[in-house]
Image 1 (cartoon, one colour):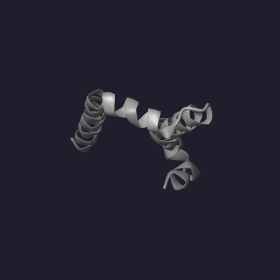
Image 2: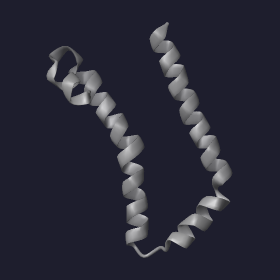
Image 3: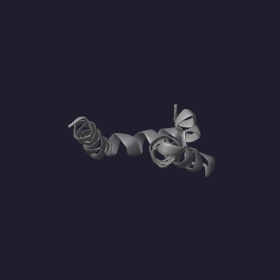
Image 4: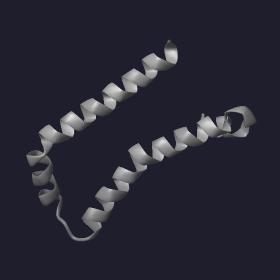
Length: 77
Protein backbone atom coordinates (compact mmCIF):
# COMPACT_ATOMS: atom_id res chain seq x y z
CA UNK A 1 0.00 0.00 0.00
CA UNK A 2 2.84 2.37 0.80
CA UNK A 3 4.46 1.67 -2.58
CA UNK A 4 1.14 2.33 -4.30
CA UNK A 5 0.92 5.66 -2.47
CA UNK A 6 4.50 6.50 -3.44
CA UNK A 7 3.60 6.08 -7.11
CA UNK A 8 0.88 8.70 -6.84
CA UNK A 9 2.39 12.15 -6.89
CA UNK A 10 -0.32 13.76 -4.74
CA UNK A 11 0.27 11.43 -1.76
CA UNK A 12 4.03 10.99 -1.95
CA UNK A 13 4.80 13.02 1.18
CA UNK A 14 2.18 11.17 3.26
CA UNK A 15 3.48 7.81 2.02
CA UNK A 16 7.01 8.81 2.94
CA UNK A 17 5.88 9.71 6.45
CA UNK A 18 4.09 6.38 6.79
CA UNK A 19 7.22 4.57 5.64
CA UNK A 20 9.35 6.45 8.17
CA UNK A 21 6.84 5.69 10.94
CA UNK A 22 6.82 2.01 9.97
CA UNK A 23 10.61 1.85 10.06
CA UNK A 24 10.76 3.66 13.38
CA UNK A 25 8.16 1.56 15.18
CA UNK A 26 8.90 -1.86 13.66
CA UNK A 27 12.33 -2.13 12.08
CA UNK A 28 14.37 -0.02 14.51
CA UNK A 29 13.35 -2.01 17.64
CA UNK A 30 14.22 -5.24 15.83
CA UNK A 31 17.64 -3.85 14.96
CA UNK A 32 18.19 -2.74 18.55
CA UNK A 33 17.35 -6.19 19.92
CA UNK A 34 19.51 -7.83 17.26
CA UNK A 35 22.39 -5.52 18.14
CA UNK A 36 22.07 -6.29 21.85
CA UNK A 37 22.06 -10.03 21.24
CA UNK A 38 24.86 -9.76 18.67
CA UNK A 39 27.13 -8.10 21.24
CA UNK A 40 26.93 -11.22 23.38
CA UNK A 41 24.07 -10.58 25.78
CA UNK A 42 22.20 -13.83 26.39
CA UNK A 43 18.49 -14.23 25.85
CA UNK A 44 18.09 -15.02 29.56
CA UNK A 45 19.59 -11.64 30.46
CA UNK A 46 17.30 -9.86 28.00
CA UNK A 47 14.30 -11.73 29.45
CA UNK A 48 15.25 -10.78 33.03
CA UNK A 49 15.61 -7.10 32.10
CA UNK A 50 12.24 -7.17 30.34
CA UNK A 51 10.61 -8.78 33.39
CA UNK A 52 11.98 -5.99 35.59
CA UNK A 53 10.80 -3.28 33.18
CA UNK A 54 7.42 -4.79 32.24
CA UNK A 55 5.48 -1.99 33.95
CA UNK A 56 7.33 0.74 32.09
CA UNK A 57 6.98 -1.11 28.80
CA UNK A 58 3.23 -1.44 29.30
CA UNK A 59 2.89 2.27 30.11
CA UNK A 60 4.86 3.24 27.02
CA UNK A 61 2.77 0.94 24.82
CA UNK A 62 -0.42 2.31 26.35
CA UNK A 63 0.78 5.80 25.46
CA UNK A 64 1.57 4.75 21.90
CA UNK A 65 -1.83 3.12 21.45
CA UNK A 66 -3.56 6.14 22.98
CA UNK A 67 -1.69 8.38 20.55
CA UNK A 68 -2.73 6.20 17.61
CA UNK A 69 -6.34 6.32 18.79
CA UNK A 70 -6.21 10.11 19.01
CA UNK A 71 -4.74 10.33 15.50
CA UNK A 72 -7.42 8.02 14.11
CA UNK A 73 -10.21 9.98 15.76
CA UNK A 74 -8.67 13.27 14.64
CA UNK A 75 -8.48 12.06 11.03
CA UNK A 76 -12.14 10.97 11.09
CA UNK A 77 -13.45 14.24 12.50
